[in-house]
Image (cartoon, rainbow, N blue to C red; front, side, top):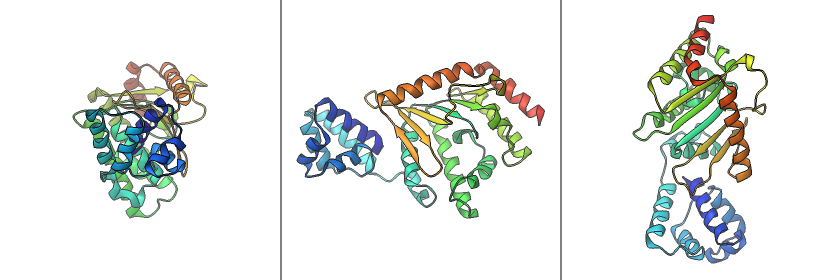
Length: 277
């Protein structure tokens, strides 16, 4: 929520024609703090936000009240804070975005998307990442991943549209039985969850539009908030919300939707992978 609130404040500032330095003076702060606020990297003081709203020409009581409600929500503890010992700060930002998104579009080249992983599969994937090796740490991170998946079954679930490289589905992560169970779980998800769309990018498709690797694009219900592109690296992540960056990745994911096998082929492909095991 912090990054969304920060993006909203940035949009208001830009619309008013002010620089970050211009915005810093009324709240007795520096240009760098305004930057951190707009990136969602610090907590928000209500007094500072009210002063900024006044500076940006936002005087309507209802609109100001709505922004203050976002401030309180952004500053409130989140359920994933209890997993901070196994979750780096750069990923906690993503958890906040994921929980708020109305549409999640992604391409995965190596693993099944985290929101669709079975517990057994996740137990095999988590130790492959850096910094998580102790059994209790692995168990906590797996519980976090399972808890994330609840957004897909909540009353107002986001739509998830994922393209997964066939190689990720044929790689026996956790062993043959774990992979079989994972594929069967995907079949169940595609069959029973109308808010989830899954396409497979076949091996025989050859080259494709995303040679750079996995990425996720998140869209939010608030129209004034920009889409965010999430690029996870080994020990950090990039969050892109510039119009040119978002448009570039939006074009890539649309091309992937065309290059991947049609949606009606997903279950036959998954069934075929199980038969090949």
